[in-house]
Length: 146
Image (tube, rainbow, N blue to C red; front, top):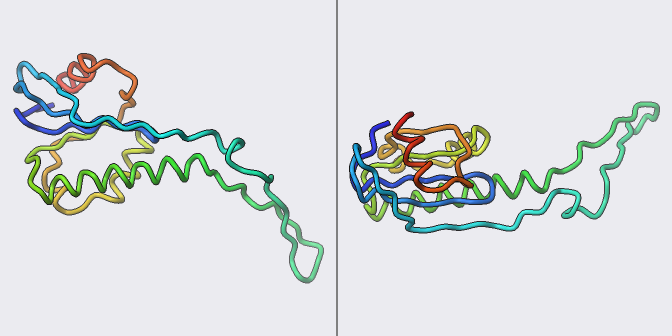
């Protein structure tokens, strides 16, 4: 993947995000952390106080279970929307011209729902991998090889 000088790289999953800037160039990238954020997002069982219930029709006889709310996933989706909002603010303030996003497929899909047109116009590439727990040198290498 082409990694222009001064490009911004967002590495995110549903609870961690890194905003990196390439101080190097395409051949010798040098990612520097501009912002790092992590949220505490316990499992749904630790966030919910009740289990899912059952519903029945007014005429009786027909019963079905109610799908439980996945509070953990709701928080991950909200976190991705916040990351997209941060990207939007940076784009509107012209803080970057080139953007690369690295995220697992589910998070990447959620981010795409919230991309502003200014973010989309600066987007130069996406990589659907979870690299949030990897050292920066590994992220640089993964993007060079993508």
